[in-house]
Length: 74
Image (cartoon, rainbow, N blue to C red; front, side, top):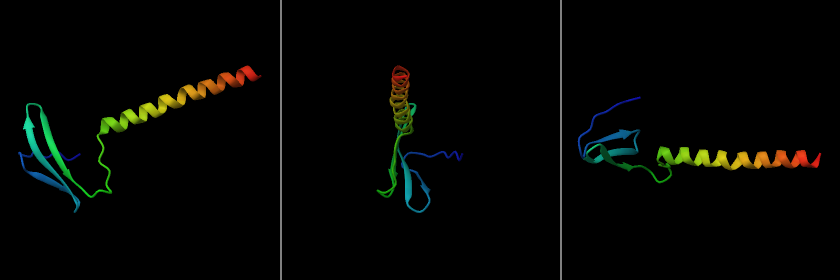
């Protein structure tokens, strides 16, 4: 992991076509701007984790229900 200190309006480059700019610092929060091509998806990590948990939760009850049905049909 690379750790970089930046001041407001300073930026870092990732490859040739992604730029991350520190826009604002307020208390314990930092606002960043991301300049990247439209074909590169940018998603907050907590949303990806929540989506994964939701998918797992929706599959488990279905599997349990199917197992219960199988047992009833025996």
